[in-house]
Amino acid sequence: MPTYTVTVANLSLSPQQKSQIAEAITAAHNAQTGAPRFFAQVLFSAANQGDHFVGGRVNSAPQVYVHGLVREGRSIEIKQALISQMLEEIVQIVDITAEDVWIYLQDIPATQMIEFGRFLPAPGDEAEWEKGMSLGKRASLLK
Image 1 (cartoon, rainbow, N blue to C red):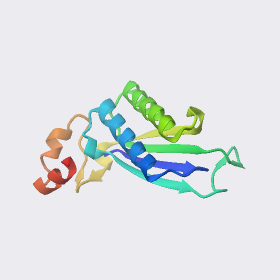
Image 2 (cartoon, one colour):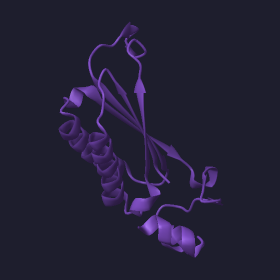
Image 3 (cartoon, rainbow, N blue to C red):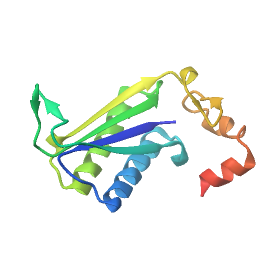
Image 4 (cartoon, rainbow, N blue to C red):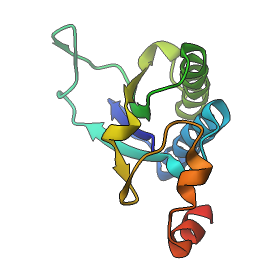
């Protein structure tokens, strides 16, 4: 359900750091929204040197940018707590300053998202929606 794209510029993440960031984002999303952990997916990409600009100029400082696509319907307080928790974790994992981590959350109506072959439920209706999954898919996601 939530899809988080983590893009880095002027730094390289180790496989362990990627795993830690993915876990931190998943844990934060679960803790702050109550959505099951298996709903979260995290994708990584890296900007090539000279491909990241800030203020019209090539940025040479290390930077982590997180763009999260989430279902609408959550309060500003929940979203800010989610962003704050992710920020704290990423700063520690990457050993970067908070000023060099940018996080954006973008709300999308559940009626405009299909995952696992079906339109997504409204926040809070995940348990009922999950019952419509095949037993095999549910078992694989809960591992």
